[in-house]
Amino acid sequence: MAYEDYVIEDFMNAWFKKDYSVLSEEDFKIVYSEYLDTSGLFLSDDFEKQSYIHHLHTRIEYVKMYIKSQRSFIKNFGVPYSLSFENFKNRYGHFLLWKDDKTDFENQLVKIEKREQKNISLLEGKIKELQDLRSKNSKNKLPIDKEESLAKSRVSFIRMMNSLGKIGYKISRKETYVDELSIMIKQQLEENQDNG
Image (cartoon, rainbow, N blue to C red; front, side, top):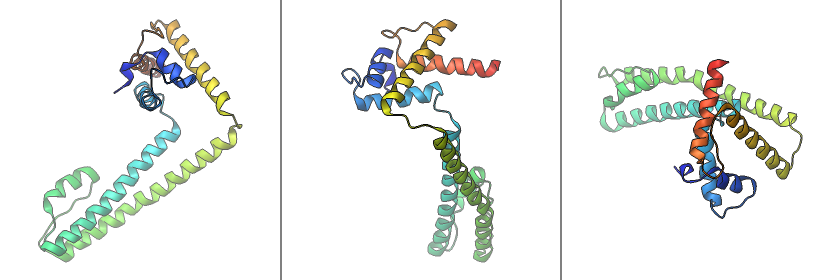
């Protein structure tokens, strides 16, 4: 992690003034990413949909690869690689059993492929939802130039720091580190969720 090495002032200078004298541009990207991750500010409908799409895609590809590997293993060795059956069942819910019968085992693999079709359809639906969400969001936004967007981000960031200060958090631009600010934001978001 790098965000514990920089105070808020350095972070703000890099972000809003493009002053990379203390925090290099490359380090800023890392610190900014860590700040978003820890604070929980990255959570959005778009992000959640992307995460779910990634999860589904990974599952589909893994199951395809697993089935292909089992077929290849049987072709080369005459038996499946049975040591992975338990992990495959626990991870993806598909039960495999070797009964010393290649045809029966192939039928089990075909059934798994058919059951996974629902995940392929679900993935396609989620991709469409994400595309629709992005299309809707882009239609609702007026074109904003980078300078105006940066100015709005700065105002929003300062308001957030002021709000945390009013609640009772002690924040100093020159003494508070970015990781501390991230944790304060995360804590306040969690408290707001619990109360509301």
